[in-house]
Amino acid sequence: KLSNRLQQIADLVPKGAKLADIGSDHALLPSYLAERGMIAFAVAGEVNEGPFQAAVKQVREAGLTGRIEVRLGDGLSVLKPEEVDCITIAGMGGALIVSILTAGLDKLAGVRTLVLQPNVGEDTVRRWLLEHGWFLAKEHILEEDGKIYEVLTALRTSEADRANEELYEPRVLRPDLVVDKERLLQMGPYLLDQGSDVFIHKWMLELEKLERICKQLSQSAAEASRAKEDELRRFIRETEEVL
Ligand code: SAM
Image 1 (cartoon, protein in one colour):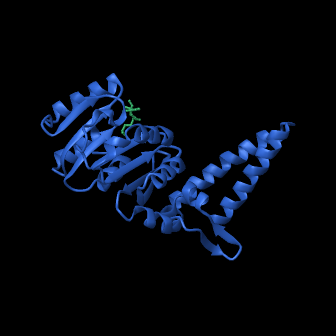
Image 2 (cartoon, protein in one colour):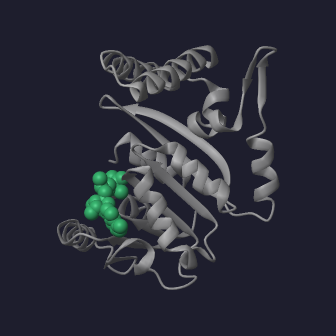
Image 3 (spheres, rainbow, N blue to C red):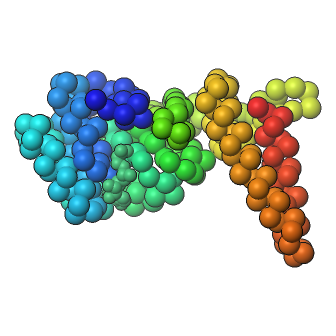
């Protein structure tokens, strides 16, 4: 059985996909999908020897050797051109996910679906998708074992740019409250609309963290600290209004 987090990601992989799971660790996600006949095949990529060996062992023991190929290498470099049509990258920081995608731009030809689960830095991932012609089609948020995870699904369509433009169009929540593109990139356009309990909880925790930083900054005499504190306070106030 998968964790709820990996199950959510598995549910988002299109049926019959040719999948690459990058940073696959024990290859649990591709194993789950291959065992149930939900994908055509998978490549499980790992840059580190330990997790690579763990993935090899898992695939062998599950009898999936013919359907999952485990490869050792950095990011998308393990893929051949046009080999897969869906890529999952989960359980790492947004900056690392973005650096993997950027380094492997040539390997994205033929890929139609990206399912990305950054542990932090979701805004970095949304911005990358927007700037590289990927339409953010879905967002999910869930809480498991005291951690909150966001899962972003992006599609490459000929309409991506136009659809994104609509998605990130500033929203007037009240006459005096406009949610701009920056804010939508930060919090997630769908997540903000849904306003689920988990989403609210995530941002309450985030604001508490920022409050603590403000307190520390207020104890410093430096000019730069003052400016930073003001900026954070403004951000906190605006976020509270949006929630
Ligand atoms: N994707 C699994 C999940 O979500 O449960 C495993 C997440 S694990 C915390 C992150 C994995 O990514 C590690 O096994 C690490 O070795 C791998 N990794 C980190 N950077 C990588 C890169 N540039 N290319 C491939 N794998 C990478």
